[in-house]
Amino acid sequence: MSNQVALIRRLTDRVAELEDVIGIGTDDVDLIKLATGLQPAKCRILGMLRKNRGIVSTWVLFDALYGGRPECDQPKSGKTIHVAVSGLRADLRLLNIGVNVTTVHGMGYQMDEPSRVKLGELMQAQLAKIQPAERA
Image 1 (cartoon, rainbow, N blue to C red):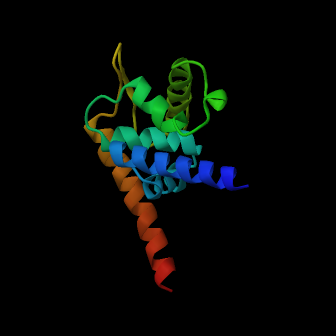
Image 2: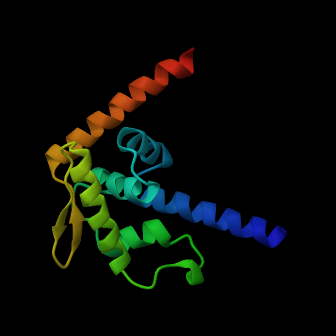
C-alpha cells in the first residue's frame, strides 16, 4: 500500500511540475470544460495553447498529457497528439465558438490571438457564474 501512496505522490508532484512549466492549472482546465463541455485532455490542450503565445511542440503536449503515467500506460507515439488535436478541431467547429487551433508544420501547434481572447472571455463568463454561487 505504501508503494501505491508513494507513486501517487510522485505522479501528483509531476503533474504540478508540468502545470508550472506550461502555465496552466486545473482551475483553467475546469473553466474550459465548463465553457465548452470538451473532454479534459482536449481542455488541457486548449489551456496550454491559450497560455503559451508561441508554438507549443507536439512533445510538450505529449509530456503534459501523458508524462505522469507509467511508461507501460503511455501511448507509443506523438501521433496520439495529432489525433487529439484533430478531434479537438472537429469539436471546436461543432461548438462554433470562434476558437481555432493551427498547425505549424514540423514544430507544433498554436492559437491565434482572437481565439485566445475568445476562450478567455468564455472562461471569465463561467467564472462569473461560479463565484456568486460560492459566496451564497
